[in-house]
Length: 67
Image (cartoon, rainbow, N blue to C red):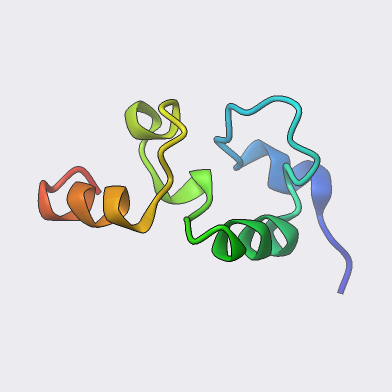
């Protein structure tokens, strides 16, 4: 399977500019799960820009109806 890097980048809302995994979903997901967090694409913009991508922040956002 070939990575559709440029197409993937158009859907990536990650604001961390030096990220080497931008557009590489499988690498991004592996990296964040190993850090016990979720990738930017599961958060709305107002949460993503805080860089708090923890499971706890995700659960709080779901319970508040933000996601």
